[in-house]
Amino acid sequence: MLALPLSAHPQATPSLSDSSQISLITILPGDPVYSFAGHSAVRVHDPTRNLDRLYNYGTFSFEDPLFIPKFLYGDLQYFLSVTDYAPMLRFYVRQGRPVIEQPLNLSRQQRSAVFAFLQHNVRPENRYYQYDFFFDNCSTRIRDVLRQTLGEKVSFTDVQPPTRTFREFLDSYVASRPLLDLGFDLALGLPADRVPTREEGMFLPVPLMEAFEDATVTVQGRSRPLVTHTDTVRWVNGYDATAPGFDWPYALSLVVLVLVLGWTGRQAAYGHRPGGTGDALLLVLVGCVGLGVLFLWFGSSYTVTDANLNLFWAWPPHLFAAYMLLRQPRSSFLRPYLAATAAAAGLFILSWPLWPQNFHHTVLPLVTAISIRTGWWTLLLYGIRSSGSPSPTRLHET
Image 1 (tube, helix red, strand yellow):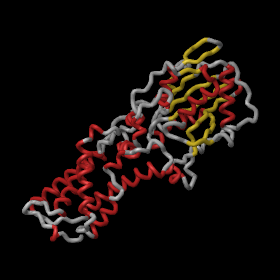
Image 2: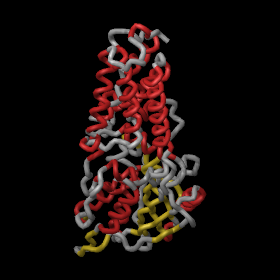
Image 3: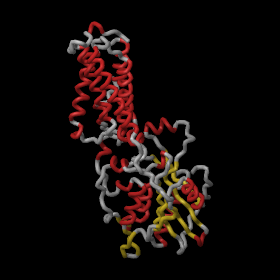
Image 4: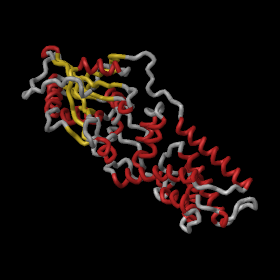
């Protein structure tokens, strides 16, 4: 997108002609990860003035050497860009993404006001803003453009209020991306499990498009639909960006659970001396998840990652426990720690339906495997075992 030529920005913004048109452009989700939820932009078309531009609040640059650290911290600087409409349309079509246009039912004066606002915002000193995926993005900015230029003349009171939570909104877009689905559920905390307000529900392109269909605008004292009609500019045969894909993270977690059951059962039946390597790897995996959750909650500027109850089962100290399990498996630290881990994991599983946060289903087999292995180690370290199991004095550092 950044490689496309930017249109010149005139110092003075002329009024649009009677033949002008301002439209909401909705680009449906595509294959690139950044396009999983689709995109919104504003088209300003005035054939009399030979003007056809696309204003895009969703522009960002990978060229910043600190892009990844800033992304993790939540310091994302997006900006408004303007390009010629035709090459941008070809760009999205090449990506195999349908494009939908909704011309807005505005008067010439209102169209000119929106155009002037966009031209002012695209100036270098005004174009940047602090991006927030839920509350300040390419879709919410377009909603706010109308709010700021038209005031009370644009109304969303007839828009149906959302019935889904923020997290449930995202779930429908990541059905074909199981790893991204898992990542969202691990990273997002309790704030993502509330139902957004009517206007907050426009944070995604398709809900914004649907809201515009139900919105109204007052022109010359009369209320009329905000959108004149909805036109599919380009469609892709067989398009289905949200078709469910194979849920391989969940399948992998089930494999881990089956291996743990077989491994623990064999040790219990034949009295094999347990080694710490496999259990240490399991603890390292869960500890790293907990460390990431802890950072997003307390170390980043995101608000939707606060109060993340995944920390109840993903403990960052598991990293230290894994080290001790490899180096000093008979350490006095491990006995109460592994017992507490087994108890917390068991309680988490038993109370699964009662948690106010919606956890990813991949978590359940993984936590079950943790409870089994830490429970088994607890039995061994405290000497509560079957007759065929090794005594604590036979545990060796491995």
